[in-house]
Image 1: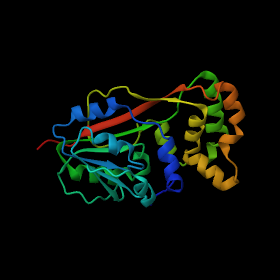
Image 2 (image 1 turned 180 degrees about the vertical axis):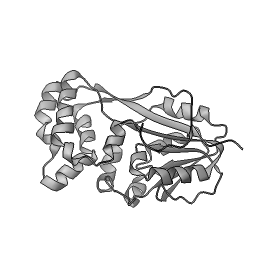
Image 3 (image 1 turned 60 degrees about the vertical axis):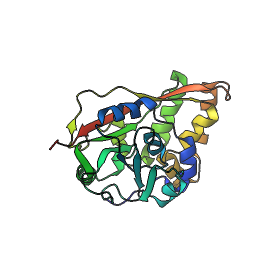
Length: 251
């Protein structure tokens, strides 16, 4: 599968506007691992998950096929940043405690990536992939959101977006599934401007702008403003997480 780059053209905006993953997610991942030496964070993008993982693991190998995303990543002594495909990395076999893919698994050749993850993981090592999809604010805001998402941007979403909407349930994931996975969500307190900035980072928003020369979010901005109320008021925005996690066999 050829690398599909939907985010490099706005890497800095993407990094600034994206919501953050909850601390509870990384604590849970660390609790499932026997060792905490090395993580491979695949499709790391702006490095948000990579940075969080340094609080629980000694070293993080963070890779992304986009040079622009890696160039925008912050320096950290515990992180090695690499421009690499998900299907082939430079790590040695059997050396990794945890492989993670945050909001990126749907872009990979899943079969080849899983083979590579199994190669680098220690016996009994953990592979975890997760995504977030539709956000929730309020009934009024969510109605405008769905009009933007489906009616305006529907034809502009990449084909792979359906995997996020399915919570990765139907993708190849040949690891021994964990018995119980927590129900977690992302949560932010945002002003209207912050919320709209996030909507503009969507790959479909960027494709719409490129194809039509128009900002799709601006077409709905008046409706968002009416639904939101005071634009300076911070409102809670929630995204449920969909997580798949499993182990390689023990020796």
